[in-house]
Length: 117
Image (cartoon, rainbow, N blue to C red; front, side):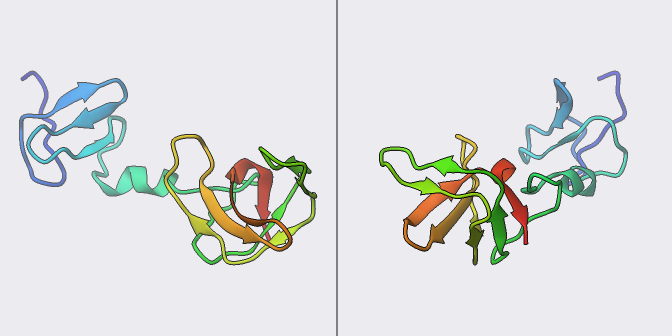
């Protein structure tokens, strides 16, 4: 290859670039192409963030920032509702917070509609 890039996880020289990521075919590790910091660089940007950009974690308390209709029912989660003990989940549809709301029950929320309390 014409590059001197090695996998920061296993040290393999057989890495290739796919879009903005480097990929190692031996250990399946992926990392950002721009940094020389290795495997730790992309993890700083990852994570679930609220509407204000604050990093969320499991067990946090959040506040809903706008009225949200509950799909499939006539219920509405009002803006200003506090939700305690959230769990972060990996969801492909964007609903990355799993929680239980008093009076409504278990549901998933998008992090863009909450702020850290």
